Image (tube, rainbow, N blue to C red; front, side, top):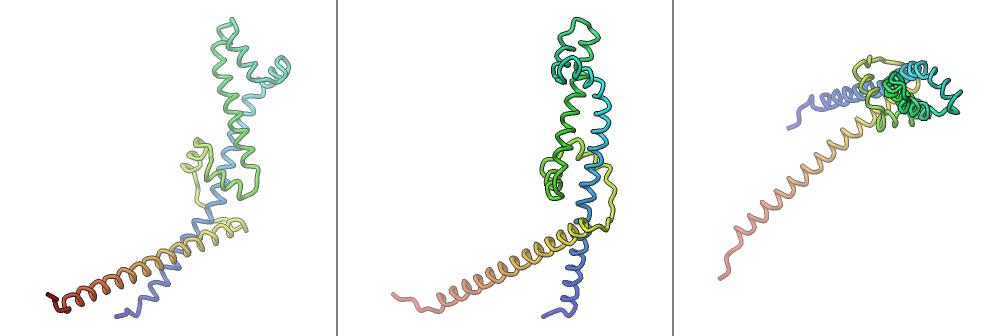
Length: 191
């Protein structure tokens, strides 16, 4: 027995999944933008922090910050020795942020895959915690939204097709097994 409202329900579910995929997809470029803004803000801050040390390294160590840190560590002055770890931390953070900045300079696809597959954990977590959901209406957001919605619908259709196909296969197999058993029961025994 077919229920008359089943096609309407199925269509409504498909529309809800499409809308969900659209809204989720629109968030992709917004999240990447917020991640980039966070990395950029940290980069600017650490650039200011390292600028004095970089000037000293430029004048005394041909720009080599590692040589500056080594000098601090090996100095007989206790103040320099105690500051060596702080300077090394600033240098390390600067290099990490420089590498992250460079990774985010590519195409929109490259930036997306970088944030998806190889983000800096600290900045990714910060962005996730502070993320503000937006509905930007630019071409990139619309592209991601429609793309995600289509992928969600295709996955749903594939899942439903697979379930329907497997269900029919199992039902047919069960009927064949039942028919085989009945045939064996009806067959006279040969002695």
